[in-house]
Length: 407
Ligand code: PLP
Image (cartoon, rainbow, N blue to C red):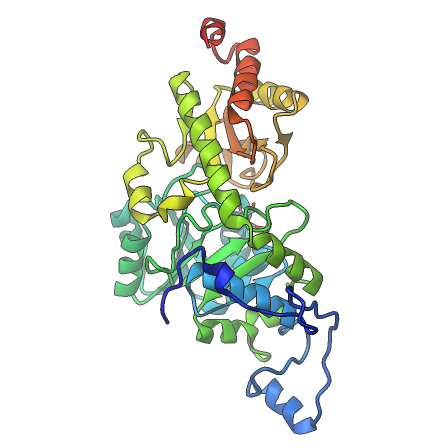
């Protein structure tokens, strides 16, 4: 299948039932058949275009899935009720008892908890590795490994995966490269770089309005059919199905993703440069100081920038908490987990989104106490935002006040 550029969602053409410019929302959990034979064929997976039951598929979910597949350049996609509702069926579809996974050690805390604490109960074990070290990744692969798992840009440390390099390793060992692209929609297209399966938590940038959770698995028709299979498909049987109304509203929000991502990236890049100049320990893939800056540049769809996520380290959890509370008070954003909202969101991952990771392992991967993760919003005047953030930092003695006055 020809790869569709990331911003070509606009090329899709779906009309509503009465010619509406939005597809009609399918407000049904079940569907009638004109003949009993067609119903039987649909159960067998042999009646293209027929709907059976909305846990299996629904027109609204298929519209959203097709738009996301067009964005990621995969044959098709299956939407789910949450990001975790997309990730867990993929793992359980590919692996069975006795199988093994090699995963990046810096991944979203919920995914980490699933691989570390839950899937071993089913006989599926995971080795966690430094994903930026391809030799270590390859060395961790065993004869029972089925999946190489990573995030394009990791939560929360913003490590960047060399997707082409990982894809070559996965191909060599005949295992699946599964990439969670939640932090870098449009900026990075993992399937173009060789990933077999691309996952998103739609909860974040893609929906962008922090009003729902959602997820998607983008992949080959064969794999998505397997996930949906009525007899042994993990998505069908585990049942984390998205509601049609949510699918319709996420599809509408998806259409402005390209504009939002550019603004998130521009704002985050501006702040990251300022914070770094101020002497703060700042991590942002767009900074030359980021260890994988060149790699990101090589992989990226340039027009969307380096993304909306950055971290700073303010030295201690007390300082981090005080700063976040003050920034919220000054209406610079919200002290909240999650990302991709129009407002800036900030949290200290060590005590929130990554708290599932034991303290010693947090230390080993460089997840320090004073780390604040920012999802930078769509602020129209980012210079004003910076000035006010800087005032907060100086009043809390995170930055020296002299420089603040000079600004
Ligand atoms: N993947 C990443 C990178 C995430 O940050 C998250 C949630 O924070 C998830 C997956 C899980 O998504 P959801 O909360 O929609 O289940």
